[in-house]
Length: 329
Ligand code: AOF
Ligand code: ZN
Image (cartoon, rainbow, N blue to C red; front, side, top):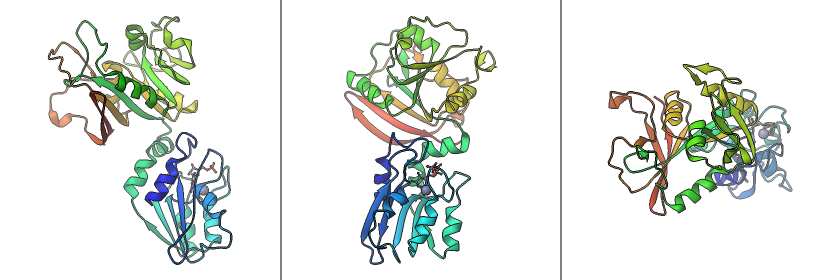
């Protein structure tokens, strides 16, 4: 299964909105006879890629490993489960059930008297967390990025913020952006920092159209400006869920949010963030009047904290990067 995960990852950046899927075929003696993966959106699924490479039917009586339930619908390609059944394996080992309601491959395998087992389901779901969010909520996967001092500050009270993290950490942010379909920011960030945010697609939340059209962010790439004219307003602020839904309908499956504490706080408060990437500089501002990276609400109880799970951490230059998933409340 871990081999399936590694194969699946080769499709990163090329298969969205489809899932990352890898497949490994073993013959009846347990020898690996073929491997495959989903290479590109609209192209063969992993099982088809692997099974079509077999010369004779080496899979007969063997085992097929695939990190997602084989599909049973006619999409851009015919159902994988039919091809799997034709190959007469004894057993199919699956990472996770497909959350696509059109898919019911497991029932078909069982009807064909093929043994079905699950392994490493948590890891399989983690690998396809973007696909799961897209398919089940029809919203893009949202990662909030912030860079703060050790005491969680992103600027002094006078607004000075350059630079909190090292040049290496900032270079890492440039690399990260490429993994997302869209960068989202606020009019506040555009007005105070005038960032370029080079990317193929960007979105600026600008309720009252305060940004200057000459701002650097407007000079390059496609940009969607959400304002009170094109977006529903809730309590005087843009309805962020509505903006994300609009982005999803425009083919944006993942969003990287780079903004100040107000927007980051609202996104967290409304439960719209899936992950936080936090760069932490080994610096202490030691001033409670400094601006905080998350500025959501008045919270009186520690038990009301938003809880996260750190799944990756590394030192970049002088700084730390923590990658975390939001835990369900
Ligand atoms: C698999 N193996 O490698 C993939 C699966 O439009 P299509 O034909 O590409 O179908 C897309 C759906 O098929 C997708 O939403 C997901 O449910 C499944 N993708 N399934 O068994 C694969 N890529
Ligand atoms: Zn398929």
